[in-house]
Image (tube, rainbow, N blue to C red):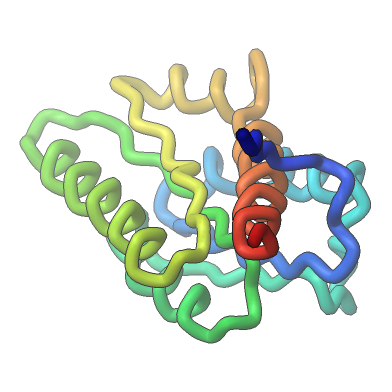
Length: 161
């Protein structure tokens, strides 16, 4: 019997792409900060001259899957993190956007075999989004941890006989 688990310390040579939605950037900027803090504390070079990290900004969460797929398809990255915030309004727009974003991101992972972390907050209010992006805790940190674990796990699966 083999048991496979990801590790958080195997970051040498790991390349990470982060795709961030500009819409609701008050929230997504905080998610990105938490994400970068976690990556840095686990040994990923997050400086502007980093060869381990690239960041792509997109207009909104709806555009996350396309850019995540484009990055994952290059073969340069072992993991992609998609960060966004979709906040419920008075119209059905929320349901349409989040449905397509979640299906799109899942599809990218399956089609490219590169883990794409779903770091899109779906909340009813801006207050809830801000709480999840740093007022109470920063889920950006958790999304980065998931990325490190999944990149390591996929690597160990690829290396298994």
